[in-house]
Length: 138
Image 1 (spheres, rainbow, N blue to C red):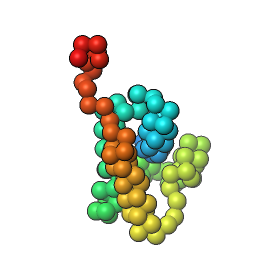
Image 2 (image 1 turned 90 degrees about the horizontal axis):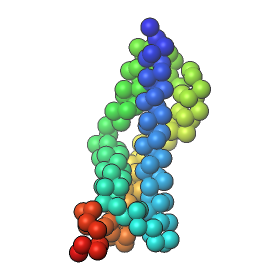
Image 3 (image 1 turned 60 degrees about the vertical axis):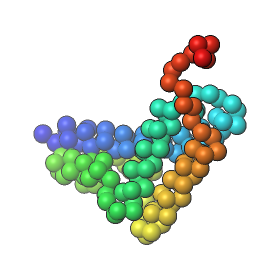
C-alpha cells in the first residue's frame, strides 16, 4: 500500500520544484525577455501567475506558515511509512535542491527581496493590458 503514497509524494515534490523553477526562471525571463524585446514575457496571464506564485511564498514566509505542498508531501511520506528525504531518486535529488538549512529570518528576507524584485518588474516592465485583440482591429 505504500508505493502509491511514495509515488504521490515524489510527484508533489516534483511539482514543488517546478513551481520554484517557474518563480526564479520567470523573473529571469521577464527581465531578459524585455531586454531582448520578447513580447510574450509581458503576457498578462503569465505575469499574474508569476506574481501570484511569489506572492503566496512571501505571505507564507511573513505569516510563518509551512507551504501546503511541503505539508502534503510529508503526510504522503508518513502514509508510505517512508523516511523523509532519504527514499527515492526524485526525493533525494530534488529534495536537496529545494530544502536547505538556514535561520527563518534568512528565508523571510530572501523571499521578501525576491518578491520586491518581481514587483519592480511590474513597474519597470509593465505587462501588456490588451485582451487578445489583434492590434490591426484597434
